[in-house]
Length: 303
View 1 (tube, rainbow, N blue to C red):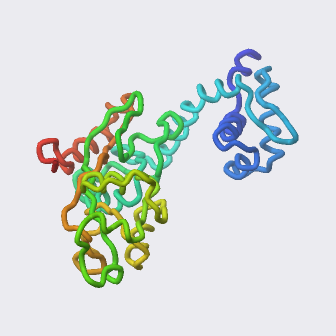
View 2 (view 1 turned 90 degrees about the vertical axis):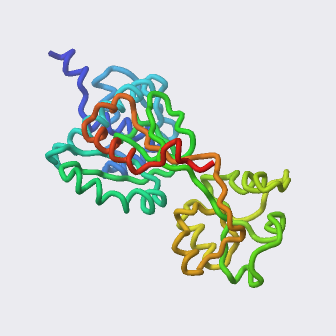
């Protein structure tokens, strides 16, 4: 019985260890768990005593995981996420199941959300929970069934569905170009450029496709989301390279103008990505099949 008890530590102590590994400090772990740092320290010490293994390195009051603890956390993290996910489903208790989806904020709000009423009409018994993630993540470390992702989703152990390629236009406020459009793409180099953090080479790629050689780094301000770079363009702070789905309304109302009228296809595309282990989940399967009807097919993708 004593051996069995040692092999099943408390959830609270395991959560403290996982949070310390993921967040990197006892203070951050304490804040996430709504505990004091001393309480987190006690949880970790209890876990060490129970397992009989040194898990924590203590250096000048800074806590870090030993190599053995790092391997242990990698093994238990997925189990903790499964418990959290099962508890969430039990708490919400929808008849048809739930789908926990990681989303990209701008694309999801402009492309996915307007389409979701149709899915809700067809599948009113399925609940979709959405959380924003701007950067790639590990499905084993986060309790998601699927994710909307931009780029090449080369995550191991996953499958994907192509949703849409991205086509971009250089746009700006009319106040930035009082005489109208520029004569050539190279003239854009004379104007302030707005860069998006998630597409660091976007302008270089656009100039390359326009036949403009510019080997040096391009100056300009960097923004972390399309919503902020869109606002910067609207207020005349520079020229932004924005997806056409994002700027249709601003172009129609004249708040933005296209510096050059033809949209250019970028290197990346938007995908729905999910772990292979989730492929047969009923809620995900229904969502995936519905989303395929909304997505661009390979035959209709613009080239």
